[in-house]
Every structure is written in structure tokens, then in C-alpha cells.
Image: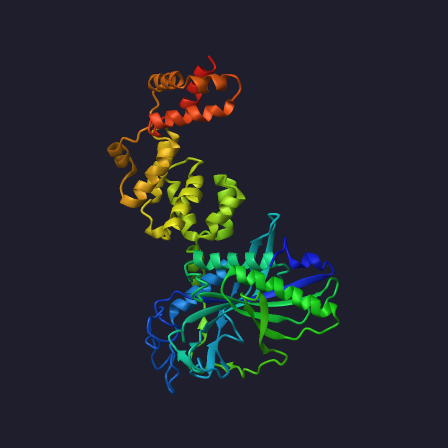
Length: 487
């Protein structure tokens, strides 16, 4: 799909109202109500017990860490932390829900009335209001065979602790959808409660979309986009769904309330199920779990542990460090990269550090398909390389080679420089002698340059770099070539 800003530009009489429900899978060691490992298992149904498998009479016990993580999420998103919250049973039948009910928080969630600030294209901040954050357990997973007409159930995921973060329909463009989700994912990564891995389902969003004529007070009929596991697909699906609904209204039709799936191959949404009638989940309070009481002291202690959040880090990078908005955006999207930059700044004050990180470090990681934690160019080593360039010990070309040497050998940059003789030649006398020799050896090129063929200047620079094996000081070489060619 091709579009400049949004599909809404084609339909200026319409506006979108979008709310998002995000499920955040928590990084606890064990599941929410039992001691089974909360990890991705290789074998199906290997991380289960009578509690998460829904055996009759099995008694759940709440994981304290889940409450701590919910508390952190609420504080990071400016929520009211409720002094008292309770659990409820949400009844529905599905093959991967072994108890035939899900334990969640319906009547009294742990966090309410928060907001997530997002930065718009013009640099202004818009607050996306949150209705609630509540704790719940995940269901298992259905696996459908592509070879036979069979389905299998893997309960390893059953009982995985989740936070559901529900927004008001404050989002009005596809750009805001993507920005909100990226911001929220960064927040849960920064506070250390979720990996944010969308491919594994650790961070997944259900997007509720409706359109209406501008000036209309009543919200349009919403459709839910479900089970989309990338920002690109969510963006494409939202754009498609906005236009689909607008076209229905333009043709005099009525939008039906549905849950729809995104088919990325066909670039279209397809019906999963109708939502014309509200499901009756027969909620009632969970009798086997106690009421959660949150003391003021616990909130204060959690607040003290709160790290610097993405927006605050962005403002520090741009206002205090002097990075461009583009550079700061790239850093804050990956907490490990942002932390790497902060760590490297302890070893160098060079303004060139950011260029080495965005160009050389990220390029090397991508080329070799490794993570930042696997790279042996530590913040200290990169800071040293940058300073060696800035101080004139090595030139930029040599520094790039040195970066690769360090990455491949896991050794100190200065040791490699000494062993390989990589120090930059900055002796004026030595370089001047070589420049004179090259000009004498290439009289035709020198004469052509002097009558106006200025592109030949690059020829002489290349000859000098060959002579010095790439170790000559580039600025000195340029100055000396100009001096002697213009004599």
C-alpha cells in the first residue's frame, strides 16, 4: 500500500477514533499462579502442572512479582494505583483455556486513569489516556496441522502472567497508532518487565478502529484488528481498515462490529468473528485468591526505583547532549543501544561518538547478525577508538579497520595499533617529501590539473594514500598537494 501520510488525507470529511488493548507478557521466573517456569519451552506441554492445566480442586497462589511489575507499569504510565484490587473469573469455552474461565481483573483493576505521552511529527506531545491496567493469566495455544484436519493444544503458555493496558479511543491517525505502541513497548522494556518481542507474542495489540464524519459526536461502529505481530503490519492493517469502513459509509452501508484479521499477503483484513452482540462472560469474583492491598510505602519504594523513561531520555539526548531528534529517536527505541551510548559517553566527550554508533556499530551488528551484547566492541573500546581519531593518532580509514579488528579479536584498540603499526603519519616533512615525489612522477596529470582539470586532485590524494598505506593524515595531505600543485 502506498500513501504519503494517511489514508485519511483522501477523505477529509472523516476522522478516526482508535483505542488499543495491549497485552504485555511479564518476565517473571515462574507463572502467575503456580511454580511452573515462565519460559519458552521446546517441547509442548512440558511446563505445566495441575494449577495451570486447570485440574479440578487445584488452588492458585498469586506471584508477588506480578504485582510489583503491575505497580511499575502503572507508575511509568501515570496511573492511579488503587489501594484495593480484586480478581474475577471470566467464563468462556475455548480449547486452550483448560479451566473454561480466565482469571483476570474486571471489577477492580490494580491501575486506572493513566496516560502515555507520545511525540507527534511536529514535536508536540499528545497524551493518550489509559482506562486501566489489569493483571490476568494467558491462555494456552492451539496448533493447527497443515497436513491433516487436526488441531493440537499446547498449554505451556497457560498461566503466563499478563498485563492488559487499555487506552481510551484518543488515537486519531495511523502515525499515532505506531508511535503509541512503540512508546509503550519502550516503556515496558525500560522498566524491565517485558522483552517486547512481538514475534514471540510477548507484546501484542488489539486495535479497535472506527470512523465518523467530522463534527459527529457519536462514535462510529468499531472493528477490532487482532493478532498482528509487527508495527509495519499494524500500520498497513489500520490504513486498510480505515478506508474499508469509510467506503462502506460512503456507499450508504453500515459498518458491522467484527473482529478481523490481517492478511499481509493480500493486503486486506478478513472477518474472524462477528461482535454484534456483547459476549456474556458471567464475571464473578475469584473466590480462591485474596484481595490485593497496596500500601503507600510500597508505591513510594517503587517510585524510587523507576528508571529514566523513553521521553525523558529523548529530551536529555536532544537538549543536554545535543543529538538531533533523528539520532535520539533511534537510540531510545532500543534500550540496550541507549544504554550503550550513555556508557560510551563516560569514556569520550567527542561529538563523533553518535556517528560511530549509528554507522559503524549498528552496521557491523546488522552485517554479522549479532546482538549488541555479543559485540566485543565495548562502550569503553569504542570511546577509545573515537578519541584516537579525534586526537590524530589514527585517521578515519584506519579507525574503521581498527573497529573490525577489535570486533573480531576481542582485544584492546591501542594494543592492535602498536602491533600492526597503524599510527597516522602526521610528520609534515615526511608527507611533503612524498607529495613532491608523486608530482614529479606524474607530470602530465600535474600539468592538466594546473590548466583546470581539478578532478585530478583526487588522483594525487589516492597516490598519497597508496604511498602511506592509508596512514597519512588526510588534512595534511590535502593541504600539501594543493600547495605544491599550485606552485
